Every structure is written in structure tokens, then in C-alpha cells.
Amino acid sequence: MKKAIFPIALALTLAIGILLGHLMTNNAQTYTVLNQQTHKDAGNKVTELLEILSEAYVDSLEMDSIAESIVPLIMQQLDPHSVYISSQDIQAVSDELSASFVGIGIQYNMMTDTVYIVNIIKGGPSEKAGLLPDDKILMVDTFNLAGQKRSNNFVQSHIKGEKGTVAHLTVQRPNVDSLLHINVTRDDIISKSIDASYMIDDVIGYVNISKFSESTYKEFLHSLASLKRAGMKKLIIDLRGNGGGYMEPAVNMLNELVRNNTLLVYMEGNKTKRREWIANGSGSSINTKLIVLIDEFSASASEIFAGAIQDNDRGLIVGRRSFGKGLVQTEFPFRDGSAVRMTIARYYTPSGRCIQKPYTMGKSEDYAADILNRYMHGEFFHADSIHQNDSTIYHTVGGRTVYGGGGIMPDIFVPRDTSKFTPYSHLILNNSLHYKFSRQHLAQHRNEYQTLKNGAEMEKYLLSHHIMDEFFDYCDKNDLPLYKKDYEIYKDLIVSMVIGQIIRNYFDDNEYYIYVNKTDETVLKAIELFKQ
Image 1: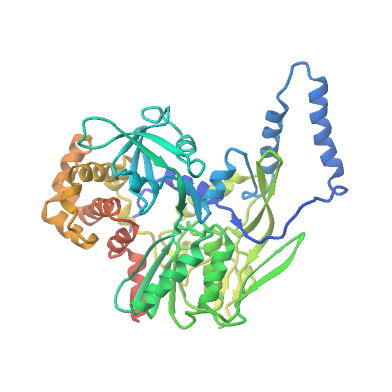
Image 2: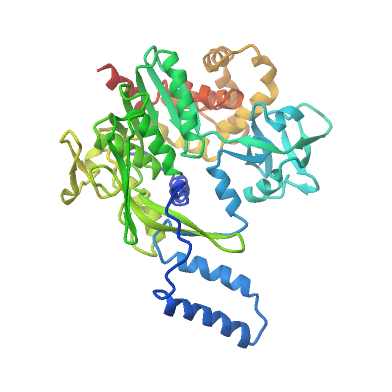
């Protein structure tokens, strides 16, 4: 099959996102004082230089600003996952993996310089205040958000705030002539990491985990209990696109699935003694048949999870080779609230495979480009394009051969679906036409859907009301005509993109995955394997 053009900008964005998704341990070894003697000469040189600049330089200097520039440069000489985090960014980075944070309880997107509310978190402050999906937030307090090309950090810094404080919002609502002024009292917002959990059929359950955060294990237990009540005997855990997060939730999840005294993962470093994580025998689902889905954007904690399942012959790994991120970071805070997250060890799967792929110190650009090189070599499309290193052969507990060298190679390879990367799909995705159309359509027709109970009913309703004709008209008005000849070739893809986005915006991620997984080749392969 001919390879489709890969959206390189998107791949780079995702790759860089994974580089920032550091694998952290909640109870990692604490380093409070560095060995002063070992680092005396280097430390003195940096300190002395700053003192010389402060005392002798011809012009006055902002020494804090200079120090802020020096620290990132030092970190850039290390591995790709050791980074400096400024005091301005430290809270946002921490919130990403927190079980909760303080905010107003909305999901939003920045489109054409405007903050559009995508979804309202149920039971949250915004729902109580009367905000609705499709509302545009023009101002927060006295700060203008519309037409200003504001950064996402700027928007977040003004939407979030201390618990109990009030965000004074100026809102534009579809089909309402005058602007609305709505006050929302900030409160704790629960951050979920499981996007979907449902029964595919009478015995197969499906769980999609987007990240490993503080709340992931608790959410996973809730999903397991709910699926078991529904009759689950087999489970698909979808870790595709999961860039990782905290290691402990992944280990706790593994403990629910494997037998007592099973080695799950271990870490070791030059100055970090080996530490092992072993199942304690309290697992609630050790007899549930299991398939784990991964892809090239599954990283860190996702790879720990998949590697433990594979090495212990606990289930099948299906999809494509994972990213290859197995470095352990510990956070070292500075007095001004900033911090460095520095690599202290590597993670290894039970068979002894190092998850981390090779890298060159100080060459993070080459490291980030690896995902594109893998694409160009055909790895996403053909299993035989992946060249395994015979010097890194390991064996599972059952004697199967697995390979090291970075990342987890699946037991069953599923190529990237080339039908999703056609010239028309690129144009639609790059211009966000399916998303923009969905917002416009729901702004005009949301009230019509109040009697619909789920995505399946909405799909049937939309098709019966010729939703694609409406989409064609929208594309024409946006200078992207979809000719009937081309539509017939890419019909299934385009219909899925449009209807899927409307379902997602009106209902939630769970209904979206129920809809798109019906045609997802990797999910269908997992179902086929279970039935075999």
C-alpha cells in the first residue's frame, strides 16, 4: 500500500510533548545535599563568574535574569528528559498530573484568537454558574481574551486562581444578541485520566487511559468494578498516545493484574541503587484475559506497564513499537520556586530490557526527530522495517524472545491506517474544519438533540438528516470543496471525522470512543484475537 504523507508538524509536536512528559516517582529517593567536594571546582567557577559579573561588569546587570538563562543551558547538556522549569511554569506542570486543581471547570480550545468552551465539567463551578458549551469567553475580569492572540499560559493563568475567588467572565453566547456577564467561583476540579470505559460486547471490556496521574489507579479500580458488574471476562487497555506520567499508578494497576511475587519493573542508576517493584498478591483481576494497545506515542509509564505484561507473558501487546522513554527524574527545587527535573536512573522491564532508546548527551533535537525518522523508514506501516538488534535479545518468563534497544515491540503488529492520511483528511485536519463545523452545527441545533441518549442514536439521527450535505456546504464556504468523486473514495473516513467530532462535543470522550472504535483497526484486531 502506498504510504500517505505524514503530518510532520503534528508528529514533531507530539514528540516534543513526550519529551516534556517526564517519568516521575511519587516516592523517589530524596536528594537534599549534593556532594560539595565532588562538584567543588565546577561549582566554584560558575559561582565566581557570577560574582565577577556582579562586581566588575561595565554596566548594571539583572543577575537573576542571567542565572535564569544559565541553568537551562546547563540542563541542555544532559539527557533529553532533564529539564529546568521556571517558577512561572512549575504549577502548570504539577497540575497536569494532579488528581485535582483549582479552576472554573471547563474544557476549552483557542480558535481564531477566541476561547471557545468545548465542554462543561459536570458538577463544577461553571455548570453551577450557567455557562454552556459553545460559549465564547471574551474577558476574564479586566483582561481581554478575544482577538489578542493570547498564549495558552496567559489564558490559564487568568482562568485558574485561588479557591474561593471569583472569575468575572464576559461571555458571547450563540443566538443571544447581548453579551452575558457571568461570575464563577473557583473551586477544586477533579482531573480524570481515563477517557473511556465501556463494554464492547457481552464479555470484552475497554479502558482508554490518556495519562498516569495521581488519580489513575483509583479511576482504574472504579472502571474494573463497573466492567465486571457488566460481565467482563476479557479486557482491552488502550495506552496509545499515552505519554506517561507517574510510575506508581502504573505499578498499582499491574498489581491488580498479575500473580503474587511477580517482578514488575526495576530501576537502577550510577548513583541510585537497584530498586524493584514486585506484585504483592492482592490483585483482583489476575484471571482476566488481557490485551494492551500501544503505539509510537506510548511512553514512560505506558512502556513500564506494557513491558511488565509482555515479559511476564500476562497478555498480548498489540499495535506499534512504543516511544522508548525509560529515564527516571527527580525534582530538585530552588528557593525562588523554580526547579530542575533531573534524570537519576533508568527503568528496566522484568527480563532486563532497558526501556530507554539511545540518545546523545546535549542533542535533544536529534532525539526529537527520531519519531520522524522511524516514519520515513516505514516502521509505522511495515513490521519488517523494524530492525531488531540481535545483541539485545531477552526472554519472557515463558521463553519467548523479546528485544531491547529502546521501546516495547508489540507481539502483534498493526500498521498505521493509511486511509486516515489522505490529501483531503490533511486539509480538513490542518484547517480544523471538522471541529469548527461541529461547533457551528451544535450552536444552531443543540436543542434538537436533548432526547438523544447516546452517540449511536446521534449517529443515526445525523445521517438521516443529511449531515454530510451540510458539511459540504460548510467546506465550500471555507474554500475547500469536497467533490463527489473524492468523497466516494474517502467517504468512511470523512463521515467518521465529522460525526465523531459532533458526538464528542455534545456528549463526552466515552461516547466518542464507542463510536470511533467500531472502525479502529487496532481495536478490531484485539477483538479478533480474543475471539480466536
